[in-house]
Image 1: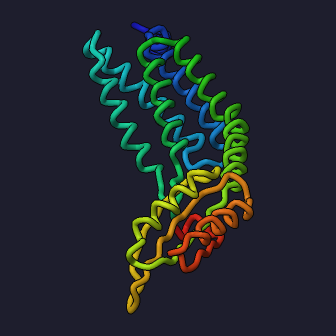
Image 2: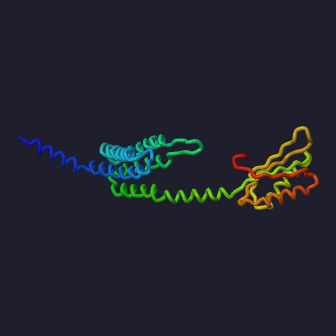
Image 3: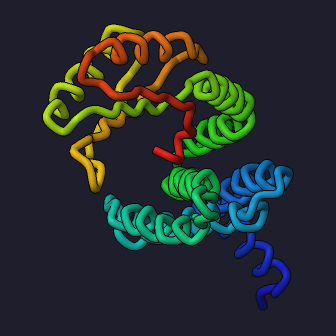
Length: 244
């Protein structure tokens, strides 16, 4: 008569010896490592979510390769399925979009699980290390780039120039205003002309961008245009980007 405890022990050892067990165990550990870093930063997809995604991807890939060896169709389904899951983590908050990094991390967690499920243990560990490094090391670098770009944007100033002339010289007024702007270190953002109701006058209006805050350039443009005999008046004001 066979000892039931001995049979249980033999079955357990046989189960551990199967390649499925170490693959799923590795996926569980690596997913927990990825999720721990996300949980530490208080992200929406934290420890459990990343662990489940990584473990589930490994289980599906391992099952697909066990049933139909040599096919990669299951991996394609895992990639598309996790893509839908990541889309749920993306939220629009006013003019900003939040959750893109969370969705990308979930996608990479599935890649780690797929590598482990396919038996590519070293690849799974390597991708995990790089993923954690990207979320940790590149964070200060991205913030430094944001601060740098915002500092450059803050130095740019927008000016609005209005030229009043008679209607017969409207086209000439557009040309002279464009030429005066081109002679300076300014960037023309927009220009338009419109007739003044109840008179034969026209207003030519342009919005220009300057890399520095230098009202002297605008005063020089106004003086050049004011010297033209058919120009009635020239005005300029500093404006904000949203009022273009």
